[in-house]
Image (cartoon, rainbow, N blue to C red; front, side, top):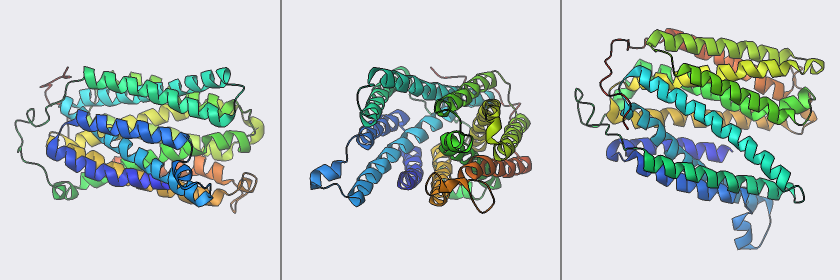
Amino acid sequence: MLSGQLADGFTTIFAGELMDRFGHFKLWHAGGSILVAISFSSVFGSCVPCKLMGTNSSTLETVGYSTFAAIFNVGWAVTQVAHMSMVNCMTSNPSSRVSLVSCRNAFTMVANLSLYGIALLMFTLLQSVSVLVQYRWIAYVSISLGSCFVVIFLVGTKEPGSIQHSTDKNLSRISWAYWFKRVLYYQVALVYTLTRLVTNVSQAFLAFYVIYDLEMPQSSKALIPAIIYVCSLIVSVILQETRWSSWRLKLYFSAGAVLWILSGLGIVLLPSRLHNVMYAISIIIGAANALMTVTSISMEGVLVGEDLNGCAFVYGSLSFVDKVSCGIALYILESYQGTIRSNLVTAFGYSVTRFGLGFVPAACSLLSAIVAYTMDLPDTRRRPLVEPLLA
């Protein structure tokens, strides 16, 4: 996982720089999607290097799977930066940009929920085969279905003209130094990175927490994430109808951070005999995730403003910090987790799982809310709607 996160992080910077130089977001998106489809099939398939070398050593398996995980994340990084950069190039209106981000987050939740549906179907139809085969078919069906939607996106979406619609700005490419000299760049980077730490770390430890700490039924490790995704989807849809301004971005983000702080405290203190309370906490987590994710990404759009010739670098560089930070954080937490049973006691009396799911996201939420409060976001309320959503 760490190798994939590092590969993803470094790729985002170079991908962003190349997109700012040459454009063609859809072409980059298509290339990244192809890498994702090929490498993801290999991750869930057999060990390719092991077959070529005729051995099944654990070292070779680690190298093989790490390599394909890295390739997968390279493709994902290219796809992600291209897709996020298109938002700013499709419209210059701040409210429309936030609506697009909310829509993007909503359909991310739809994709996550669809994966649970595919898994349920495969587990039902393939009961007589091994779990390994079941997960391979889940991967193959997901890749095939995702590829169909990629084709629909590439065929049905017009390539946005970023430079042509930025008539009042210098048309030359914006250098990295321009962004590094802006205090707002570092503030937005910190807020976005902390938000991604909240969502990624909590997602990684959620299933272990409900099964081993709260001793809930096995079905809960699917039901509770599904509740989170549904609540996040609902909130994302609601956010699309909001008329946005800079102070509202900060207010909504802070509200999401407060919800996560309360959820984190509940997770840390929740005894196993009251495990059903986790269903209520999952509703709060879903709302908090949507509020923090949508507003933090929208802050990137405010940072970019009309400087569209450098928007891909902004998304790429911030994703680099996000991926590397998440990879290192998960690596450190997992290194202390050890076996399942030894995980249940730590020096502070809490399991690593409970600590990782409760305290870490709550602390990151608190710090991100403080940073968001200190931001001086430019006022976007009076910016005219020059170009709505391009067809």
